[in-house]
Image (cartoon, rainbow, N blue to C red; front, side, top):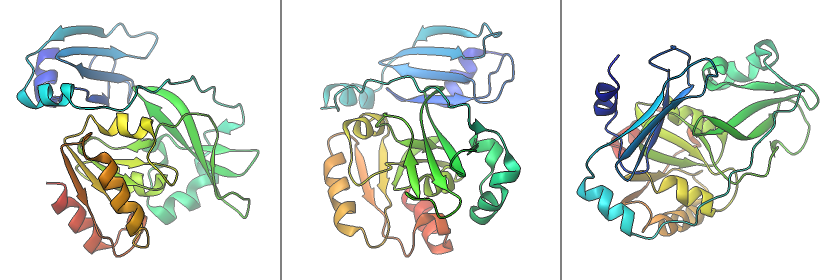
Length: 254
């Protein structure tokens, strides 16, 4: 294992963090590596693994431009304590996952025993900061935010952020090469959303077809935080995986 080769292969831009399988202990999704103004820091969050360190790398012209433009105010991240009634029960959420073609294990989905919901953990920098639950029955509200964080739900790896409304759509996007699904989980962009999205060179706004005014507003707000902001006009919500929409998404994200 050569950490320098890993750094080179990832090609991290300034402000970007990647989460992956630890190259030392081989534990899935416990290893993060971040580029902070040319300072590369890596760490494995598994208690028994000692994989951590840092080094310096040269900044690109794009890194420098990004460091001097306006960015959103830094968001305070509160610790989220997972309730004891959140359990791993893939059988209880199997029907939901099959309907939407989701890999429960890969996404780390949980089951809320008390409210009969599938739970999407909101993870940033390898730490669970919140969770969002989707009702599996008639319980309202359909979607529930459990914690107080305003950070988005994120799925996937890549250099193109695709802004969507819900976790299912984000998971669909995250299954596409080079794209990161970013679910805002609300009706507006918060400072936390803008701060997170500012690390990407390209952001694609891909909201529901009937949300054009909100789509244009999101695009307007993100200009100045993201170099390249694009709008994807959908025929249906991305979670329905219409072939035309998926094709246009991949083309637009290139």
